[in-house]
Length: 547
Image (cartoon, rainbow, N blue to C red; front, side, top):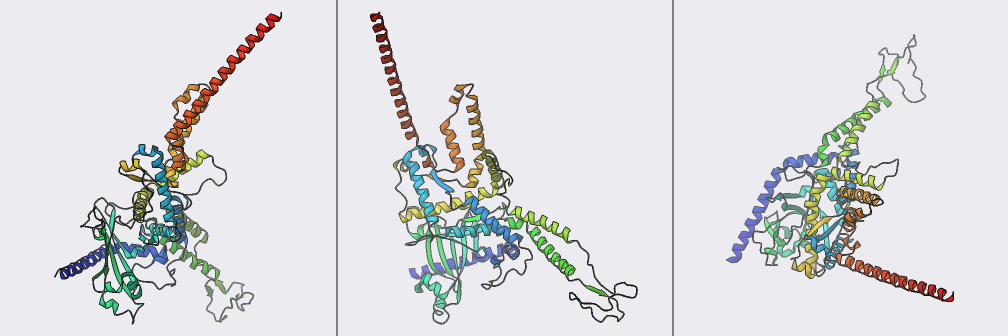
């Protein structure tokens, strides 16, 4: 009886998940139309919002100009360089209590954890670098891009960007994404491999031998667990539950759970009343459509000018004009020498049209931030000028970078920390951090974060330089400058790791040894001076006795 009740509860749960998904599909139909229009002219390979395209099928039939697709590709490269550059450590962990970061053991531990996370991300099997480019492409085109982070036992952490047509998200009351519905199409063979025969409905099992390659639709729901128990490690008591449903018979085929929401979602600008982000492509979609139409018209005009319509007199003198190069048109002139055959001029100015198209291209490229790295081309820049340029970049990206850091990257590193802990790869926590209950936070040290710190670094350099110059006349002015803090500001602005600088304890020890050495040197000089004075007195006395 209990088994039957459990089965009924599962059936009701499966139906409620599919019903909720149906509601979400209807609610975002306007978004889908918008995304589909963008896909056709900006990212044709992603045109799968209303129909499944055949692999390898030509998808550029709606495009006459490639400015937008090329700009989107460069946008993804710009974002990857600014937020997730693979040759830099663009995120670091630190204690949320500043005093703890002055303890050498704590600083070393956070540096080692940061190194472990980046080793996990850029493991060749993880696929992070390639999938992040897909995240930035989807964010630039459609404004939203979810990434699934899986921890597979014996294999490690993997990263997979999902096509937006298959992912439906919802927010918590605080505006953070806390649930997702994922549509997955698997062949019968893949479904058996993923879920096992014992968990699949009879309708699916009946196709194993006859139709092993037929696609079956499944839905995975990941969201808050009403039965969450922080003291339990059981999968059905974790903070987030995961439920897989076979759509064919509305049957649950797998249940699980996650300690941390495993799908960080990158979103561009969002309206207070909207869940999905609004992308750069949405902002300049009118320009993109206009540019395509202008290019189409320009091509037709150029074609007419190169191969013009021929006007002929209807007097029977010429049956057909031979327009091949080098041929003579007999009867092409009348008795007065006036042409009986002449090209039709459709009007229009290709030069003006090209200028107008260049204006539209420039607008599209600016929207996709293609000019973000443009600096002075004709001269070298000083360090101060570079910092001022970095400050300008930070101002341009402030709204976008804040969302990526507070939502996507912070969620990503929380998942990775959990994976490290579960896999046993997290280094032993120092006692000082355990006593403080191990609270940590992520700080961003990539190009955008350093750009935001550029103003502070510029101001610090100006004050420090002014103090040095003034010390030539007022030596005691340097007593006002805190050199240790100055160096820390420059380190943060440059993105250097904590381990580059010595801890306060090490600095104190070094300075004590230096002071001791200086005292010993001074004592030695005093002793040498006294000895030399005694020798001088003895020499004077010896000379006096000799006289």
